[in-house]
Image (tube, rainbow, N blue to C red):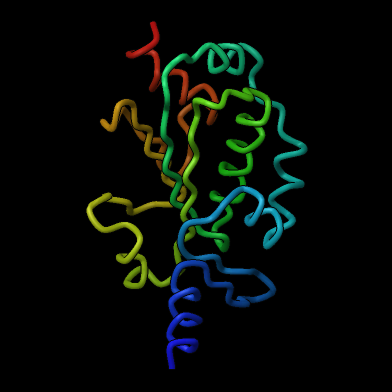
Length: 159
C-alpha cells in the first residue's frame, strides 16, 4: 500500500500524460526534464537569438534573482517563451539566476495545487523575486522580449 501511495504522490508532482502526442508535465521540473519530455522546446531554444545588449546586462547582475516559471507543455506561448528564457539563461551563464519551472495541467481546476496564492491566470507566467520580494512578472507574451523584459524588471534594482 505504501508503495502505491508513493507512486501516486510522485505522479502528482511530475506527471506525464499523453495528450495528442504531447506530454503534459505537472509540478516542479527542470530545464533538462522539459527538454527530455518535450524535445521540440530545445529546437525552439536553439534557434532563438536573444538581444546581445540584454544578455550583457543580465550577466552583470550581482544579487540572487529567483524566477518562478509557470507553464503548460500543451501551450504554444509556453513553448516559445520558456524556450527563449532557457536560451537566454544559457548565454547569461550567471549562477545568481535561480530558475524554478512548474508545469501546470491544462485543466484549470487542477492547477490550484501548484499556483495557490500566486495569482497565475495566463501561461506562461514568470514571477521575478529579489530578496524574497516580487519585483515583476512576464505574463503570457513578453512586452519586448523575455530578456529585455527581465532587464526592465531588474532595472529598478540594478540601474
